[in-house]
Structures are given as C-alpha cells and as structure tokens.
Amino acid sequence: MSLIDNVKATLKSKDTEGPFELYVTRTPGYLWACLFKWLGVHPIAVTLMSIVIGAASGWFFYSNQLEQNLIGMGLLIWANWYDCADGQLARMTNKRTLIGRILDGFCGDVWFFSIYFFICLRTQSYEIPFTNMQWGVFIWLLGAWAGLRCHGRQCAIGDYYRNIHLYYLLGKSKAELDSSDKIREEMRQLKWKSKDWFNKLYLYFYARYTGSQEDQVKAFHIMKKSLEEKYGEQLPEQMREDFCKYSKKLMPLTNILTFDTRAIVMFLSLGFDVPWLYFVFESVVLEALRFYMIRKHEELCARITQQYV
Image (cartoon, rainbow, N blue to C red):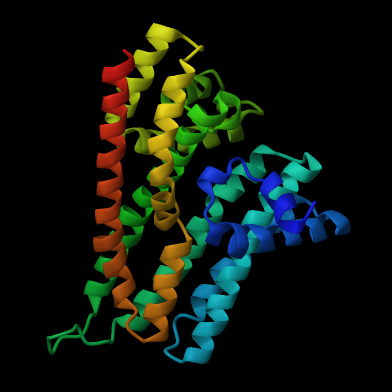
C-alpha cells in the first residue's frame, strides 16, 4: 500500500476529509504517529506535547515582527500534526484511555486561549480603522465574543455534523453521536465520593458540550426520533443513501468551521499586521457560514422526515 492509502485506512471516512486535510494535516500526523509507535511513545504524551507546543505559539503572535509570527505559525502547525497523531497512534497501538480523550478535547481550547490572549495584548494599542481611537478594552471584548461565543459553537456544530454523517453512512458504532440525556443519566449513576469521581466530572462537562451541539439541530432530532420509532434499528437503506448524498455536500463546510481555514485566515491577518481582522472574520464570516450550514442541514432533515415517516 502507498503512504496515502495507509493514511486513508486510518480515517473514519473519506467523505469527512477533504484533499487539504488529507495531505496537509492527516498525512504528516500519520508519519508522526508511525515514528512515535516505533519509539514506544504513549498517545497521552503526544497530546501533552501538542498542548505545550500549541500554547507556546501564542507568545510569538504578541510581536508584530513577521519573523516571530512565522515561528508561532510553525509551532501551531506542528501542534496540530501532533493533535492528529495522538488519535492515530491510539488506534494503532490500541491504547485508548479516558484521560487521553479528555486531554484531546482540551487541547485546542488551551491553544486558542493562549493565542487569543496574546493577539488581544498585541492589538490593544492599535488604532481602530476609520477612527482616532485605540482598540484598548474593545479588542478584549471582541476577542472574548469571537473566542468564547463564536469559535466554540462553530467547532461544536462542525464536529457534530460530521458525526451525524458518519452515523448514517457507517452505523452507530463508527460515529461518536452521543446523547446528552444518556450521558447525564450515566453521570447520575456515579458517586462523587468514590473512585469514579473523575469519570463523573468528565461526563458532566461532556454532557454540557453535547447539549450545546444538540441545541443547534432541532430538526435533526425530530427526524432521528421519528425514524427510530417507525423503523427501529433497521433504517431503510435508501433513506441512508438519500441523507448521506446531500449531507456529504456540507462536509467541506464543517472543515472550514474547524481548524484549517481558521488558521489560514489568522496567519494572513497576523502576517499583514491586522490581527483584529481575524476576530472579525470569525465573528462575521464564519458565523454566517454556521447559520447557513444549520439552515441547509435542518432543511435536509425536515425533507427526510416528510419523505420516510
């Protein structure tokens, strides 16, 4: 098998990975995973290295010197490769753990908290376009809105739509399409004063995250519930094909909402020394894209419900 064939074998589905993700992100991640496997490095160690490297990149975005920014960009790309490699390594070595899953989900949050902090610190003395005012506290407000409100919802819905597509394409076992109600029920069965306290804490935050995804997809849950009530586990094959045919068209948008496009625009805004423009892009362009994708997906779900229920 060729290198690309080996990389594709580690993917859940080619539907959810575009050419950019395959060649620029997944392939280097796979090569790192192979090296770490040969060296006997545990996947958790790779995740921890990714967290440190990605967080360190933010410091290099504080400077307005292009050379410093390029170092930060290189570190963030490196961290993203490791973020891909840890999951691939865990599957290669069958070393999947709860703490590894938690750290992997925590990884990107640490990167971008550092990055947003240093971008805001850099930009507060810049002049707001078409005014004689400095950004000052306003860049912190814009950064908080872009990072805490927009970024989180955009990544969450992109990840959720990929898992919905995999659910109907490959089946329940191949998709991480969890229910917040089931997660909360599992959490309630665990006791704080026991060895399961860490698992309970993880389930608490995971339920909140999953709930934030579910709140954005009302028509999907109506469709899913209606189909299961009528067909049980044996959904019509034609229904699966129809859903995936149109859902596949939205998969490139989910990739735009997650890391790659976001990073490219951030790099350009830093390179041209207009760092505030990245927050505007995230708050306006990516938010508009999120609303568009939700509308199209909800229309698809309503159409499938009407046709098959």
